Image 1 (tube, helix red, strand yellow):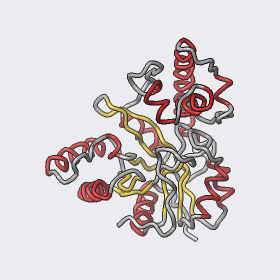
Image 2: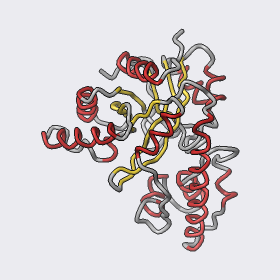
Image 3: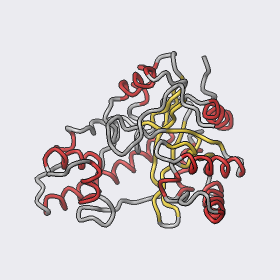
Length: 295
């Protein structure tokens, strides 16, 4: 059975090697943030899918990693992880952090600050929703998760709006009310990529840029200009401390994946794969399988 290395360098190499070999899923969410399954259920699904390795990467919290590891046992390699928001040239991007330890004290103060930001934003968005005629409060969200150090956000509001607010789906709730520019939206403080990668590096973690295709960076992948701009963008992220790129995201097309793989390889960064499964039938892709191959 493989063991997770203790150094950042070796951890990065292992993440890359496992991705190239296939059968891994390094981007999964649980009910500790905006996923539908408990950490134990995520681990059991990973085992049922016969994955060789998986990571739990909840938003702004590592509250579920111990439970996921216990449920995984020694039958499957588990990476404790995190997903944090950052800003690149004014636009939001997400950074995945991977660690060798279940308890990462060096990052907890940062995560607690992020959770306070989320709580403040939730309070303001809920106030806007009530003004718009939706009788929702903070207690309403706990029915959809959010206990302890769990991370509550817009997805939980969307789930309430589907059940009680007349929205047809999570996507419908975001389009109508919760996305940027919509009536209930409130921005929250964002840190630079460098600030996020510094926090992860100080905890001996590995930083990976999540799902670049979702930012529109790979649009028209067959055009030479797309490759040129993508090189510039990922080089900027590398200079800000990024160790790798999630080349094989669940919602990326084959053409986008190939472009990201080629550019990431050219820039000597590690390549990772993650479905971004949230455990429910929605806009997110389902969990990968042990038979899934990426290259």
